[in-house]
Image (cartoon, rainbow, N blue to C red; front, side, top):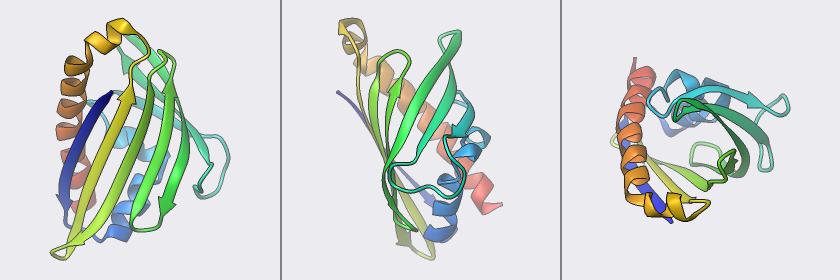
Length: 147
């Protein structure tokens, strides 16, 4: 199991941060290093538990498709989703927003199960790649929200 835990302080209210990160079609605006190129919601309207969306991500010279389903949603506090990608990785993503010093502490956790022995052997490398992407992409998110 791959697990990555990341915190970023953002000088905006939890509600503002929540509104931005749950507007999933905007994820490509700030997840450049993670390689997210496009996000498409399965249905119109606001997200709810059970809502589905698909992400297209540049990976290893090709495009990976990631199917996602919202598993937790609490306005201004939490956004969770479960994923399965075209390589067979299964992931759970949690974003928890906590008021802090007039802004928000965004706490992001990903738990991912590799699909086979080769990817299990590469777990430390994969975790490092996810951490590197998070450290850049969440700085980008913070810049966009604080601008």
